[in-house]
Amino acid sequence: MDLGILLGKIGISPALTQDISLLLIVAVFSIVFGMFIGRYKLITILINIYVSFAITQVVPDKYFSDYLYELTFFLLGIVILTISSRQLFEIYISGSGSGFLWRVFAMSFLEIIFLLSIVLSIVPKKMALEFVSPTAFEYMTGDNARLIWMIVPLVFMVFIHKRLNR
Image (cartoon, rainbow, N blue to C red; front, top):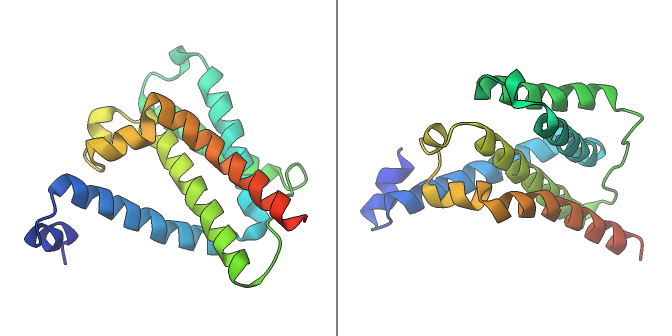
């Protein structure tokens, strides 16, 4: 079943259909990611994304002749840091019950959006627009958007940490 055709029949534009599809895919992937990774690794992976992104941004452009090299370097950085950082960033989301699941989902969602924002900013715009609408692309990679997607997970982490320590 094609979601675009289904939503098109009720008068929803193709660009909005792409945005809805992206949101649904990110939501499902966030749930799977959060449950697979678990509360013990969510914060660690977030920190590893920041570190890998920072390192990737300071590598001279001459080493990345193609976007694939930059993307591979970034993703390998996350994997290597995650494997080797067991003792470095062992921070986790504590709690149980429905509040716990909400925190895990929200943190997973913010990490996936942050990761997607970085990936979309690395790949060529023309290629990225094959998968997301121009509106979603701007929301994910615009000048202010990249800054916002870097800051929001940190603010959320501080927010849930303060709430848990009351």
